Image (cartoon, rainbow, N blue to C red; front, top):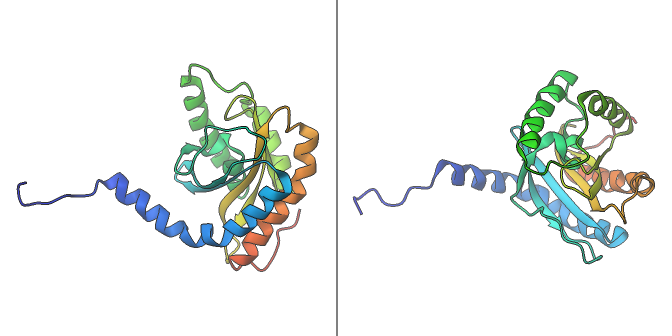
Length: 204
């Protein structure tokens, strides 16, 4: 020892700050996530934005014997995850393009890119539709065979503070089921938003 003692790395400090900042969110959301898990039997994810990425801050595994690579603390490019896209709904399209380009670089560098990654024209068209609907879908854009439907969670001032999703594999999560689950997921996200102090609901 040289007398300086142990010094926390900047990244560890940052992660600790993020965790502390999100404690009220996860505490408020957990009972509602558990209820959603019981309703659907699928994997539930809760994430927050950190720069150009999302961080999963909670996860409840489904009861179908399936396991995904996602875990609490894992980071992903915001533009290729359902919960991330839900957190992009209020952003201008120019920012969509920037975040998409960053995600594209990550995807193209992968030896086995996800098969559902969309061309920009298809991506922006889908995002426009999602903005009107108030929820998003992700079909093999992040991980092969994994699909999800997600919705934004809003804070007291109406700003999007997190994203919530229900996810499963293709055999269990067809597009028809994604569409059927969308109002259930959005309702749960709205309930969490109200618990956080949001007093309205954005028009769909």
